[in-house]
Amino acid sequence: MMVAAFLIAALMTVGSAHSSRAEKGNKQSVLVSAKVDRPILVEQGGEQEVVIQVGIDGVIHKRIRRSPLNLAVVLDRSGSMRGKKLEQAKQAAMMLVEQLDEDDIFSLVVYDSDVDVLVPAARIGSKREGLRRVIERIHPGGSTALYAGVKTGGEQLVEFLTRQRINRVLLLSDGLANVGPKSNREIASLGQRLAGQDISVTTIGLGDSYNEDLMTSLAEASDANYYYVDDVEMLADVFRQELGELQKIVARDIIIEIKFPEGVIPIDVIGREKVISGNRVIIKFAQIAAKQNRNLMIRCRVNPGKYKKQGALADVILNYQDTQQENAPGRKTMADVRIGWTKEVALAEAAIDREVMTDAELYQNAVESKQTIDLADRGEVGKARAQIRGQIAKLSSIAVSAPASKQKEIKDEIAVLEENKRDLESGKLEKAGRKQMQLNVYKKSNSK
Image (cartoon, rainbow, N blue to C red):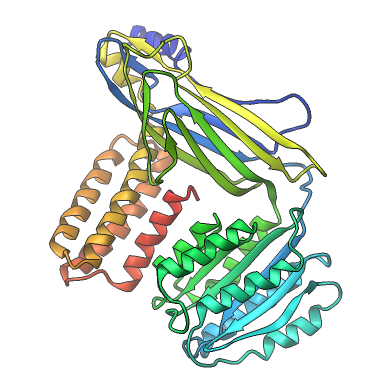
């Protein structure tokens, strides 16, 4: 046993992850790392599959140079928001105003059947008390012109739109878009146009009656955040969490390029589409905050006969704009991952990185959850039930060998699946269960 452990350790000095190799100069604001689920492969094993995990981490600085904000709050005041929902939303908006800096830009748009700009975009300055009074006077109205509300929020940002500011629309809604453009395609297209102007849209879905597909697609279009709030009392915490992230942005315009040598073929990036081009994977993130971690899981095939074993299995190059340095040029940091080789199948199996393998299964589970949702939406309930039973069985199986750090995540995911399995017994996914499953899909697909 000691001999096997020694051999594995020796082989893994060759098959190992390499963290950021930064350019010379100031401290980096983003670090990148890469590791593989199977750091030792069998030489005579033929073509073998591995999963490479690329991690992107926002660095914690002693003192964060905070980027000024250009923020538009777009608030649903339709009839369904009447009562506690609207009152809690108003309280959360007032809390947000209190925590903004004087140089931050703030605007407030409300919508029901119509759209009103209650606070045109302007510096916070000394206007907090006046802003509070405006927010307090908001009353519920009619239908839900969500598209027009978001579009108007984006227009408010344009006057103060600069690369030096974080430009974000913060949308809150509890209902379906039923006035003006209302399809997921039309609203996602709006999100893409705003993203092209360096504007991102965070979406907050409140309760169980809003369209979660629409809200996630709008947030995904600009690499922003999506929140599902089933308890109205949690709204202030969500606003606080969003503002906290915006105040700690350390890098933006992040481009991750992963290059593979001959004999290593990228199959897919689990949960992401259209990011593979030949032997390269290219992924973009809008921003990253201090202490934020975002992971990518890349499934690859390795051909021992073609792969030059002395080289890296993958080279990772990360380019970004550093917000912690005034007028800073683009920065670059790199990492690679290598593997070892053995003739012993048992040694290769013993060297498996269980944490990476478990993460890969959790990401794959999100892909399968999306398939389950699609099956249920099409009325193929029998297939959806079979799919969800398979997911539960697979997660229960990996829990046996998963590290302790992953046990709670697996348990929580199984609990969501079990609830949805019970719903499917009655013939459909219930609103709350579908939303929780969709939230889990969103988080994994967008590395949140």
